Structures are given as C-alpha cells and as structure tokens.
Image (cartoon, rainbow, N blue to C red; front, side, top):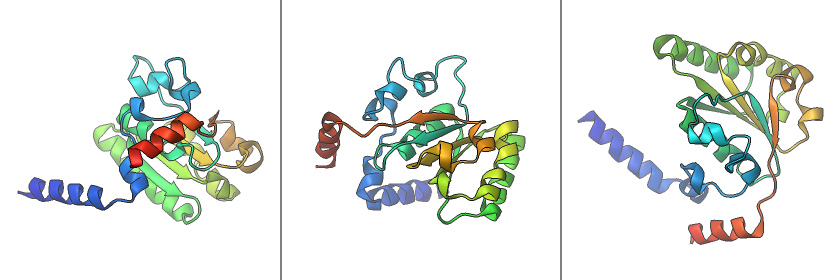
Length: 185
C-alpha cells in the first residue's frame, strides 16, 4: 500500500516540476550537445554506456550557464549506480558537507553503494569549504563533480583541483537549441 502512495506522489511531483526539470534527459542518447564528452569517443562515453572497466573520476565541469552541467552529473550518477547528492555552494557550508559525508559513509558501509556529490557553483566555496572535501574525494568515500561557470584554475583551490579532471562544456549550437525548443513545445 505504501508503494502505491509513493508511486502516486512521485508521479504528481514529476507533473508539477518546472519545465527545465521535466525536460531533463534520463538517457545519454537524449543529452544534447557536448559530443566531445558524451559521444562515442568522448571522455565520459565509457561511464555513460556502462563499458566494462569504466570508472567515474572526480571532475570539474566548466562551462557557461545552460550547457548541461547538472544534467550530465545526474546522468553519470544514474548510469554508474551511485546515489546523487546535490549541494549548492551558494547556500551550503561545512556543516552541510559533513552531514553529506556522514550519509555517504553510512551508505558505503551498509550496502557498498557509492555517492556522487554534485556541487553547483563550486567556485563560490571558500578555501576551508573546498578543503573539507579533499580527504573524502581522495580516499574514494565520494566521487566529486563540481560545476562552475568560472575558470577553475583561478577559482578552485589547487589541492582540490589536482584531484579532479576538468571537462570544458561548450555553448550549445543552433541545432541543439532547436531540438530543445522542439521538446519543450
């Protein structure tokens, strides 16, 4: 009976979600643009297709607004079987990070499930907030994906940046934007 209510609540929440959320792709084939990352020869192709031996590494997604950074992080989490833990650097602090790390530790110990931590606007974290992620990312407690519109070489501290691969997202081309509009209408 409880499952029936959960399914109904999930359906209603999906129907009431903002347009951007309803349009968010849940399959790599539906993701528009960024072929240099998600295409057959892309840097993230193996992870997104479930290729044997493909592992998700800590990364920074750097690109202009609206290029699919959050969507790409969600796809990586879904395809790799990790729990997606989003944080926004604009309204999170070290306490929020510690609570999230505690949940990740419990999850890993209880059922060996990994946690993908997505930090939107990671460049807005100060040095101590960024430092609080170091050991967890380095030791494999979490997989970190940070998103930024600013050059990470200047805005992300060197210690954290050295533990991440930077992927540059390009502005969507006219064809991708046209496809997005068609989907929305």
